[in-house]
Length: 316
Image (cartoon, rainbow, N blue to C red; front, top):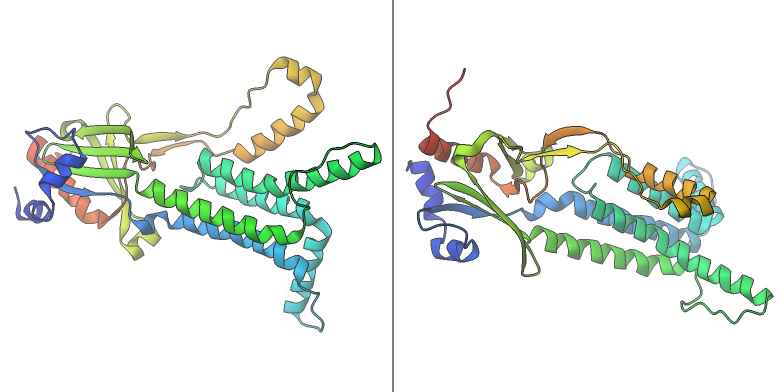
């Protein structure tokens, strides 16, 4: 092994690595181990902050009085407060739908179905809460005994809902980051995923099967010292297709019985889930070395180990 490889090997606890990666064979020598850096999840934390800010904006919009005096800042603030007062919960729903759409369509690492689903849940909670009050109010005119199980809705509930959404998103992000583990040996690259002590997937990629290796640190990654390393094989491992559209499966009898409502629902869900279509290197932490620290050093390490296993690359 070269001196560069030996430096990595000297910094790893081999017994601990073999314990955490039982799939590593006796003939393999662990060289490096790691996982996604905390800073690599910055976009998820930023999204959590944006969701909190939307909640806080509608909370403060009800509490603050329209500012007096002239000036551009006072004018803009007056318009914002007026819009919040006028649109109410529907304005919040519209803002959250726009945020959800932008996040999903932009194909960020936060554009997956789980994040999109959570944003839609955050969007609809105040709406259903308000609808419960409306149903109770209307039922009173017809002698209905229905009573909402929730407290009466008011704008002050935006604050605790925003804080709760923020804490849940941050907690899930931390768990998500810690569920991926990577190891590099002298013969393979190992990618392991586990969640709350449950192993969900693991696979090893032999250097003989690697056809393309790409280090892809983003601008933020260059500043903070992290990046993705994509390992692509001839069978397509390491690649993903980002779909342009999504279909909504609805039984025919439901469509016939409530065609108008289902068309509106299908249009809304289809609009939210629309994405561009392209084939790219997989950015899923389960399919690449995602957000690892010192990515260019790890990239060089893999190249040297590939040279030792299959020989130096020959340009045609």
